[in-house]
Image (cartoon, rainbow, N blue to C red; front, side):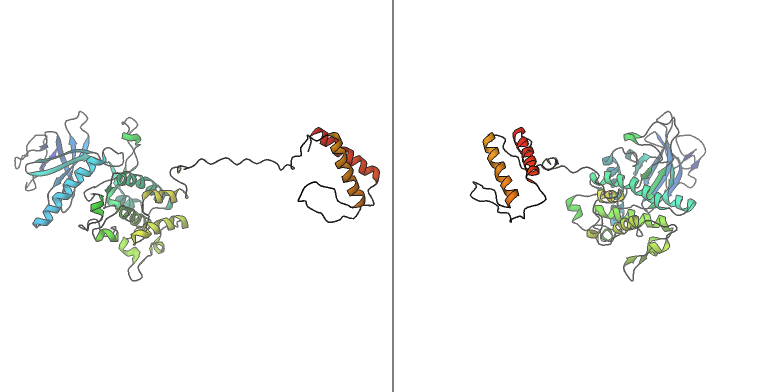
Length: 396
């Protein structure tokens, strides 16, 4: 079976596997290898088809995007051409990533532009929401951890997606055990970010110039509406996507325009933690400077404030070692006669309450002490003999 790509063909469905349309005679193969099977989508700027790649023995599925603008006006069509070409460029720049469709080809045939990309088998999150109902906190956390890594990859390559919404996030069906692994360590079953038609390169000049407002109105950030998309605009759109999945309501219904505040908590299908609520609220800040500025900041809060990567230490930190307190060291180089003299002074101090002599210029003068009548001379002599022995052995 084949589907004719001629927009004016009255009977585009062909039941045979030939190379030309039975109705209009148009070529059914693009670049002699890509055969359209059926249409799977249509927008203002083009049509999308499920196709197969007949150049490979397994004839794997792929997606054909045909540039076919429905809008009128020279400037509008020119912008559409720019966006279509831009999508091919962004996909090519991003290279192969397990969560971004791979660009297979980009060319012109019969005066029409075509883009061929990898087919992602699975439901998008809008379809999943409709079939399975509202998401819970665990699902939203998984979604954030999965999608934020894709945005981290894109933003590191200066690409702003600008059209994040449930319809553009597909949950890939886990491949069969015999299927080859995805590139770069991908493991099937993850979320894939599609439709880079609105993606934009974030150069310094572009970020400081007002451009065309692009994106889905329900999910677009306020600054993006004014044509000033930034990296934080993608974070905003992902936050709106999350509250929509938690409530099953349109984002328009989750925002109180009169009080300029989000009211999504009132419509939750299942409770969420205060921690996740604070993260989503910060993602949804209408003023860009109050919002998360980078994906890393969101990931850090999701991980409970832990750093993604350890910060380098500018100067080595010396380990602090603790040791039990010790008495002030006493020199053991004193002669026996010197020790005897000092012990006699201490004996006099204990017996008479006097003060030991000192040769120091500055000395601490303790208050006179009352002699202890209970201490006999023999006991003092015994204690002084112990002190004398310690002095000689260096135990002080």
